[in-house]
Length: 207
Image 1 (cartoon, rainbow, N blue to C red):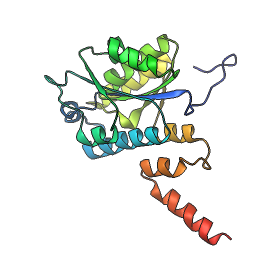
Image 2: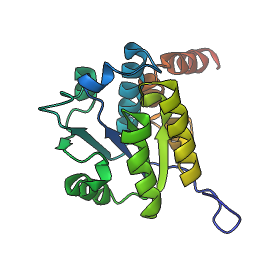
Image 3: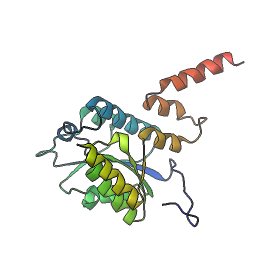
Image 4: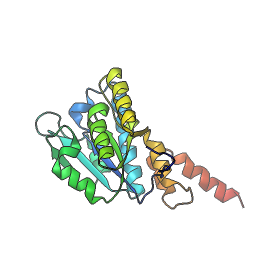
């Protein structure tokens, strides 16, 4: 958490990585705080925006071939080129392969999203805090199975010092400057293509 001795350091393309946990078909069927369509949209948008901003991405599943099935296809397509690591541990950070992949990014600020929010996103985010990382959770690119679980998960993360936000705000914080060449791709990924269109119109008729 930020304090007077350690002021808040913004997310950037140089200090942040994205960790996507267990966005699997079997788990998606149990989500009750978002519709399946909305959750799919948000997770895919987050992945596409992170790619546009050149963030390292770590993706993982749990018990893919037994309990929870594969990552949903739209996200697999958005993650083209990213290996999805399967594991058995409940906490993704407890898996040596996942931990090594996170460490290999070299980034000290980790953005998590996962199903379920209070386990798959919260456990590794809280673990990250204990390891000295800055931890963020994109709550609307996560999902869970009841309102009680959602509220309990949010409270636990905030008590541990995890920063909770929505996926678009996290990506726009990283973008920082609308003059960046990635801006159009980021807003398009966030399903805001009108930002690019309005800019083109202003440029065409502003002279």
